[in-house]
Length: 251
Length: 272
Image 1 (cartoon, rainbow over the protein chains, first blue to last red):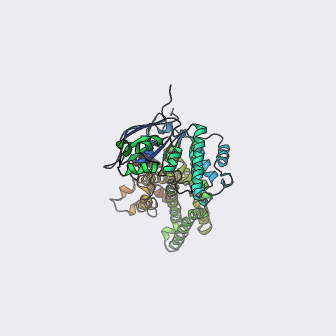
Image 2: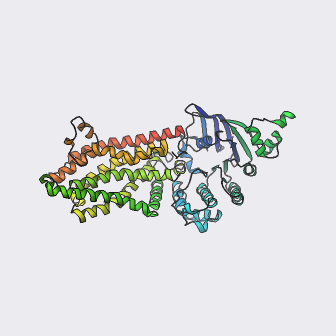
Image 3: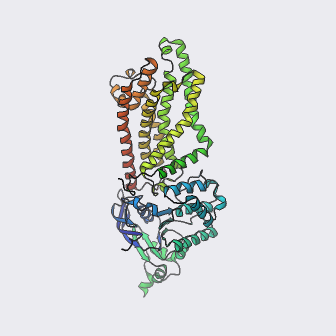
């Protein structure tokens, strides 16, 4: 029997009071794929990710993660997924090791001490493990957040602006780590980002949202060809400003 | 048999992880530890000297030795029990960590039980040194209450937890704008639960309201013990029954507010 897709969203609608944040979107992610979720502020990206994580209940439609309907059946799969975002933080007074110990226990990670040492090596945190999280630089904090995101070796990793506020060197290093993790684990990733270069490098599919709808959904190469642009930033601006598919129209 | 993936499944390891998290935090911050001892000490000393003065001037209070200090210490168990629960919860909001927890496999009952255990730890850090000071300063031995103290403690903690659970739900649903409730809600109980005076002091129409609150039975029980030297088991059982209702209502309210937070998408917005 084939395993269920990591994420399957069918006609997902979320209305806050009377305002629709997401208005009937549908998409499915294939196992081992890396998908970028793009869109301007208020496009509905955060609401979509929150629904995937079971943090918000759909007004209508269905959000399924690894075969479990969210949020109703979330406890069937929460130990198999994880999330990293600069907009949630790790307790600052705890050391990195203490934070990873707590989250490792929450996710039921076996051989936790060994796993923490391993993540320390992979994310260049070994010398910092006993330092308070609040005393780290932004780049180091991002690596700690990534270590938390990888503590349970998730099959599905959700990333919200994974390199926000990082210098180009650290951001590049983080992207490299994400690429290796995907290769090693055949993990599925969904990345919400405003950094188009990052999306072009990491993603094999891009979903562009605008005002709660999916405006476009394809591989980066096909999007560039369709819009007649040289990079995703220009494609993004075309979609955001409603300039449409000029290249195709011209043809 | 509860399925492993059910909302009601309970993992001691996950609950232990949360206790460890709060223990690490408490251990790492001396101002937090000092705060636990500071107010109970100030209260106990203030009220202790007041009682000492009244005892020298009024025959009745001379017989009722210890009621003020006893009331202060028991009130502190109630107040700190609730505050210890709520503050540990709000540490997650202040740290912007609540999103991480809510998308982890941690179940609400594991979270609640960890907060309950931590409220006992925080209370012990605050009240044990102060109760020893009460012996040294005023000759009042809280532990001299014996088994009655156990009955008082259980009932007060249950009320504190019930209120703490409900307030945490309000903060989860409404953000840190509701934080002040955690600090102030118990003071609504203070006049009604008759901490420092008998229920008969209240106007007749207010007395039935007072008897709806479990701590009222504890404070009446304490006065019966210290003044009349009688342990009122009936009062403790009544309080226990009411506490069962309060606790169930607190948990129900928390789960409903959590559900509402999911519906309104407030779990990722832990600000104001």
